[in-house]
Image 1 (cartoon, rainbow, N blue to C red):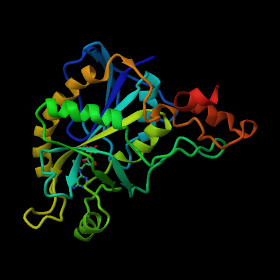
Image 2: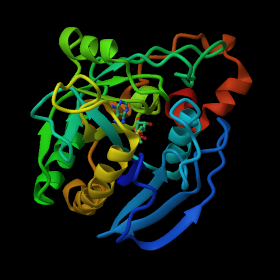
Image 3: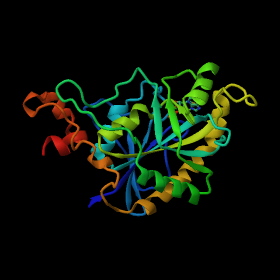
Image 4: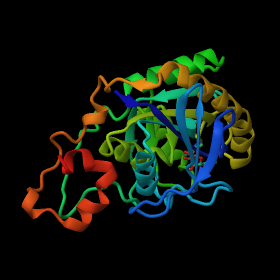
Length: 292
Ligand SMILES: CSC[C@H]1O[C@H](OP(=O)(O)O)[C@H](O)[C@@H]1O
Ligand SMILES: Nc1ncnc2[nH]cnc12
């Protein structure tokens, strides 16, 4: 049995969490760069927790410049087993209204200006992201959300756009009417792909702040309106997070969906052809299979 450590990545409006015991903001060094910020460590009901504000406290990083690899590597290095990503999003569905939460289970990745893998020349790996989120962790988030009195929808496809501008009306209609996306945001990719490469269970909670620009009865998306909705959403998210330790237990059974074994057959490069520097950088992410 490994010990559970819940890592929470907080998006826009969620720059800290409360209620943890024995807290400290700690620097975590990563060979993949400097994480977005220090990481808040502590425990809740006997379960270890780590919190990282995705954009940094004070919202320093844009969706494009968030150091996604450093963030995931740093959480893995700390001992995190399960990552809960909390994000603001626009909605493409009437019934996913501002103030509601969505447990995302699929993604369409339209980002193009980000490093998307820990692997590359000298250590090539191909992991499956057919099912990019962990159903066990998503179910725990769903239960915690319901217990916190949140209107929370189970399942949804998140379109990850590059940003930082919001979508045009034509894009918004295309994503909604032709691509089947349910919500839109700028940050869950490549975060989800990297979490899978690092063999971390990953669940995404998208907090609806707006109807993007498609809705005939709502104006175009406006960041001031988003911030107003975010203020209410972030308190709800904190309430939900407080319920998670009791649902996840201190001792962690292996993931029934195999998230924690994603690299078992993924690495293609022959041992004698591997680049030593890259292999060294992969010590936290892939040490389980590279040193076996
Ligand atoms: C404040 S609106 C746009 C901004 O909010 C979302 O951030 P996050 O996913 O980190 O909550 C969206 O993706 C944009 O980065
Ligand atoms: N409409 C939207 N598009 C992209 N990212 C968002 N984050 C919050 N609302 C958004």
